Length: 257
Image 1 (cartoon, rainbow, N blue to C red):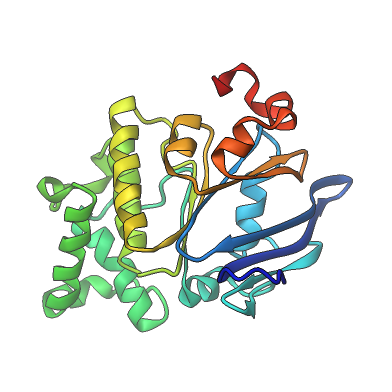
Image 2: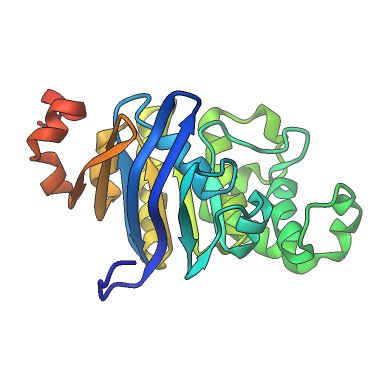
């Protein structure tokens, strides 16, 4: 671990990930500081989503370890890592399309309380006024109060992403991982999401964001790590990364302007 004075919430320690002959991640070493927004950028195929899958237990690295809040979580099941305090917003929103917006946000709160998701949780909805009230609060937080009773399967892509964010927030995670949270959104929805994530940051929540939209990255990130061909080629503040010639060559190019 680093001897840094900062409180490191997540440490990806010398992680390698091989798929047969493909070296998807090599010598990846990352420290995510508490309360910060840490962006991971890089060209398609750089290994960004693979890295997130390693962090949440969907993949077990070939070597190396992931340490969350001082505990090695490598080899733990995804739901165990979630219970420990790590929540993830997926590249494709993972919601329950047959449920209402309110029911979707209540579901993970039941799972967090009971230690596992139970398919019969709907039977207890009428008895769980406290969870219902908390869910309504987070739905308001993401600007969806007018759709609280809406059928979630009929929502726009942007609204599904906001719904999934509310589903994460009600779990009160120590660390929130966001895999391209604005992908496929209109510019208006993107800007709304940026403001929402800034509001979450003010509460001190630690976030890791994978994102292709440089406007989003430079609006939110305290620190940026750049992945290329499975390796971290640069790391620093947005200004440092923006002006790094290796980054411009590998990824940003003329877009840095």
